[in-house]
Image (tube, rainbow, N blue to C red; front, side, top):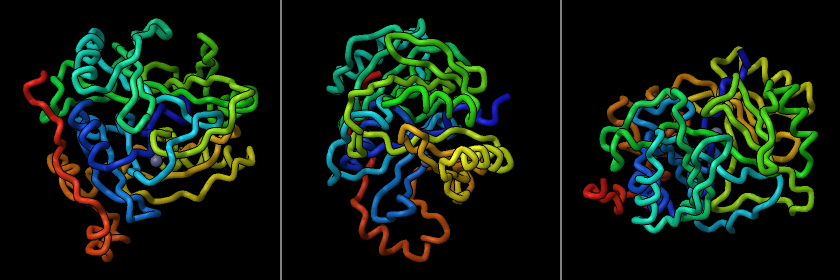
Amino acid sequence: MSDISGIHHVTAIAGNAQENLDFYTGVLGMRLVKKSVNQDMPGTYHLFFADGEAHPGTDITFFPWPDLQPAKRGHGQAAEISLAVPIGSLAYWTDRLEHYGASPKTPETRHGEHVLPFSDPHGLQLALVETSDQRDFTPWIRSSVPEAKQITALHALRLVERDMATTAGFLANVLGFSAAGIEAGWHRFSIAGGGSGRHLDILEARESPRGAWGTGGVHHVAWRVPDDVTQLKVRDRVEAAHRRPTPVIDRFWFHSVYFLEPGGVLFELATDGPGFTVDEDMSALGDRLVLPPWLEPRRQDIEAALPPLSAPAVADESYL
Ligand code: ZN
């Protein structure tokens, strides 16, 4: 078994926080499982969307930075996040995305799976992928999407790189990925035996410009490690490969190590625990602004500086 067991979460940069909340809860039907702040910049929200019980591997998170430039597409960046949906649900999703003006693109088949690419209101490239692979998933009972159609987890990620060989070597030798074929120029890598949540697809684009962070872009990609011991083991290998990992940082809901993979994409190793219920009951996840203990003394100032957020305006309960 690999030390890394799959995708833990992906963090991206959004524009307006309310629009971000409206889209991921109201249109995509995900659960807001944590409303917090960027721990390094507490004047910015950090919003976490996941399944009904916030399982690791279901979580897409955002820093809403409306004043940032749009992300610059290019190498050294993640190009797309795909989300798993049940077999047979893409017709529903096509109608739903069209209904809300999210303009789904032409459906594709990738590795034998039905895929619906689209983008969020701030330009983040997403795709829904039908899969029958079993995921740790609990439906969100207050979702605006019926249980049988809900997004179940993160499925795969696409990165664009200038030099495939260097990144491929690092993925294989340091992180434990296996090459799993090439389709339409995308090199597939799998971790922990592959399957939904364990895919990474890379396109080599030697002539493309260097990409840059901005709204609608991915900030970092986090990989799951089961515990602190395994995290340190992988961290040691990353350090031996001269990728200069950070020390272990306590993110309160999990422990994190960050480093740049050789192509320039920011990776994180995140532990499965302690999890999002460490500071809120499962039934109340996301209801209030949660701060890690070291920011709690500054709560009043932090709350005053954040824009108000209300329940999603676009949730159309009649559209099921
Ligand atoms: Zn992260």
